[in-house]
Amino acid sequence: MVITGTCSVTCSTVFDIGNYKTKLVKVEAQTCCTKQNSPPKAMLIGTPSEAGNFPVLIFLHGYLLYNSFYSQLIQHISSHGFIVIAPQLYLVEGADATEDIKSTAEITNWLAEGLQHYLPPEVEPNLKKLGLAGHSRGGKVAFSLALGKLPNISTDLKISALIGVDPVDGMNQGKQTPPSVLTYIPHSFNNLDMPVMVIGSGLGEVKKNPLFPACAPKGVNHRDFYNECCKPACYFVAKDYGHNDMLDDETKGIRGKATYCLCKKGKSREPMRRFVGGVLVAFLEAYLEGNSSDLIAIRDGHVTLPVELQDSDFLV
Image (cartoon, rainbow, N blue to C red):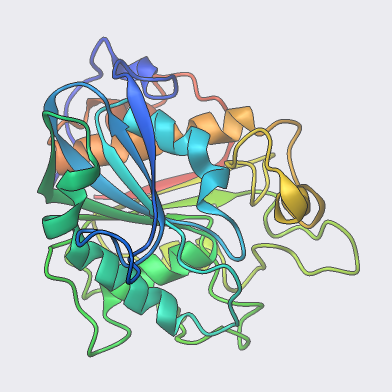
């Protein structure tokens, strides 16, 4: 798809809550005692509550985080007319992401038979318009599945758009976690037959304190992911915001408190969350819905962003 055209009168609204009322549905994982259509993993589903046929986005959480930490982001995206599937891939996990990739494939394959049972009446998922996104380790998992890093793992449905939200491939170059995604060869992701967006945080590669590594270290972060992307692709880096600044304003519990303590952060999460939600919506509108006006407006500087950009680029 070639991005051309002019900004529409609605182009400034992607960073605000959209026109659809939304519903957040919590779904338990399949067990011996659950009903037949239960998913392979527990999940949150953000959906418009009004009648319609809507594209679907699978959103994968970051390392040791809960899917509930993304509730506000999920609802932002859903309010613009998207069904968002946010599985809880694991609670405790080691360095190897192989099982996460397998689980994501299983969830994707479950959608055709199971998703409709958990949506409001008269809400229909359009699985021909399917996006895959992930934050941090979830971004690594999303890219791994799309790139076919596990040869025997595939999806029945075609993924039509791929997004990495501050994706991370390990601790450092040479210390990638398996299966490694990055090859350090420019534009090596040439087997991706879908448009790609990479979102980065300017503070993600800055250490919070000397005792802990940066949450998105140089050599394995957004910059490296984007360097390996091919056309069409776009790239945004928010200057003064950190790796977890797209999470909910309040994240509770020990893990929730850790999201504030372990990563360098901006003054407030709200601007970064609005930015991530907005560019996600604009990208999905362009490549799933064929309406590129919002993405063009962002690219050409015709809309005020919630954050200051450190970097941006488009491969078209």
